[in-house]
Amino acid sequence: MKELDFAALLCSRLCHDLISPVGAISNGIEILSDEEDEMMRAEVIKLLELSAGQTSNRLKFYSLAFGAAGGIGAHVPIRDAKNAATSLFEGTPINLDWNSEIGEMDKSTLKVLLNMILVASESLIRGGDMAVNITKTGESIITEVSVRADRVIFQDKAREMIWGNTETLDGDPKIAPAYLSSSVARELGSKIEHIEHNENSFTLKFST
Image (cartoon, rainbow, N blue to C red):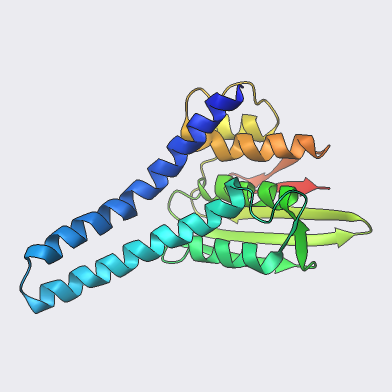
């Protein structure tokens, strides 16, 4: 896939995920400008606080997952990634459990991990449990993202991307994180494994 095509799809993904909370902020401000009822104004302010928090949380996560945070070749504290992921799922039906044996991770490996988290989270269409485990064996770092729920739907296109079939995204912005994680993994000389436990649980595994 051409870099410009991917950049366009990634921008579309960002706009899609941010337009709802940003739109709510805009609507709330408009209501406040005309509303005189104090109880109603208090409810609108709560909505503004919630929407502003959602926007901030998503931007912090996407900065690490999509951006160039830390500079080229830099290492990023694991706690930053954990905090970003925890905030991203705050107020959602996704329960995140995070365990790590290391304190920091290089930016490229972290980018793979965070995009794996996005891909896995989108299979939890009604919420569920997600576990992130980062372990170290010798010089190798193993990252695993596992999901479990009563209903899990892992899209075929996302699965194909994770396996490395990254020739086309079919114009679907939702598959951009799968493409990015698989592409960066390949640049690191590795690949992402998809391990299906049963119809309600699977794991994405990446080793460097």
